[in-house]
Length: 441
Image 1 (tube, rainbow, N blue to C red):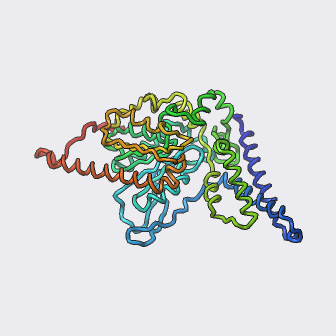
Image 2: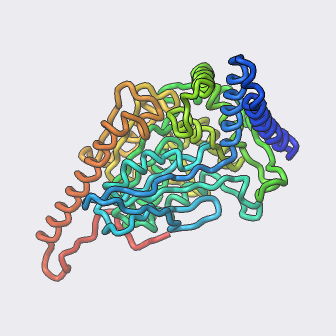
């Protein structure tokens, strides 16, 4: 399948279904059909409307759609998205709030690179923005990145996170969601060994596969069944001439979307069936619950082949992070070097993507991290999406995360005050913390 033809054939099929939907909608809405009191015309038009919209969304990058935020003064403040660090495969972006002073909390949200855009965390950003300065990793669609930019695998991803954390400074609170959890852990360990002063203040890991063998899911079962050769043959394709990344080897977002949907095919089929009936009855709208969810869910991006394959091989098959043998460009990254960063684990009881226990395994990799810097939470009845963007996040998990950040900020402040008070004269009230060294990367 490693040919441009297969990529273009898949894109051709998508465009064809979009055209069929538009055609059906037009035929079903033709004024003359009003002379025939047959509900089939309304159903035909409704099917076309839902089909056209669905296949059109698959190649569109969603907008963040966060225009304002209410400040402590009770006024709406305009929000703009600004790139802070620009790189070939992803940017560090900031949600700047006009007229608002810098907040005490500074949060870096590490978005997944697993087929969806960073906008999957839109509701997470919106919920945190009133209480913190928010930065997000905004990964680019691989089909839009020229081959001349080179490769991008898990090593490069980890080093991107290292650069972003270093840029934001030690007062940053990192929250990693799903796929990047093990790599955010590795990036923190890399800084702990090479540049301790650049480590984040806290690290919150939400529903990620630190140890995929802790509890099996369909994702881990698939990883065990298929060999790397089979996987490369089945899913890797070459970007067609239509895009800037022509010739780049990728794992297409459309294939990833197919796998997502197949995991809950019956549920998705029922959702679209119900939406078609609502459109036919005139009960649907552009921003109803179905469209708000699927406009985001269906918007997918390609991943570089080397990133996808190295993730499967090193994170899932070889369990490099779980066994603490992960390397970056040939250099071993020792997770146990994390001794100063407060770590918070969040899992969902009903998570069928990253099951309970997979993320919690991270705490066992840090034996020298004090117990008062470790925290864990298992959200009852919550699925994968709910622990970072659903009701469980809004009502229960978000307050816990903010409290965890504040508690550790207060602890750090108290510790620094104690150090200043007990420091001998001539030191300027400062002591070198254990583990700090003058050896930046």
